[in-house]
Length: 232
Image 1 (cartoon, rainbow, N blue to C red):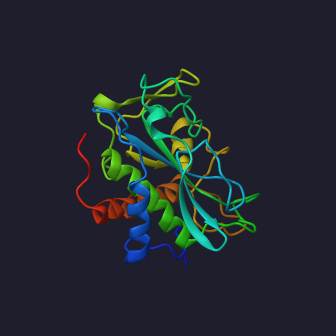
Image 2: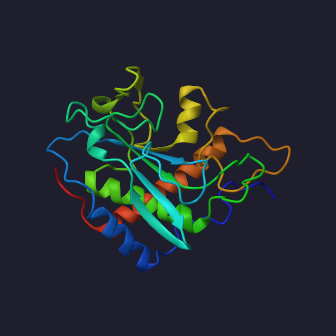
Image 3: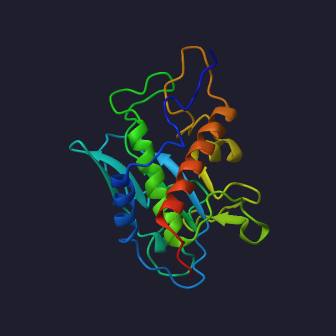
């Protein structure tokens, strides 16, 4: 039987109304953006830490704390708007922080491709990750099921000054997918597989894309569950 990097994660699974309620409540805490704010992309990560960590490298985290799933705002997303204020950007995605949102699922402390250790990602955790990405996307009008157009193609990070042409990429990518595009896939494999690889099997770009597609689909479904997106 071929290896399935999704494990038991089903992007079409019916949502628990309580999860949607948590996502809706989280969205209500997000700051109001200025008109024409320019936030266009979302990047998905895992923290490589314990389940309850708090990192300001990301704008939001899906955590598991004291037996409960928690959605947390960890860095003001308005800081990623070029020229909006003097606050530092996140340092979440190399070369790609301006005009983007970074969301992370906590866990994967000391994980390897074949052993996810004591804090692995879980189906429930991945659902909450999609929920928090859906909340950001809904709040800021980011179409996670669309690709970057020519007008929005240049992404850069004010904290390193380099630029990347993102034309044609999905508006939502995992860090594992980005690492393939930008040439450092051996260093970052976030969400490239939701389950450990069998011994002797290498992680492939196709596996990363399969997992990215699943996250994009569920995130888009959360956007639909939240209703008509805000207009800015």
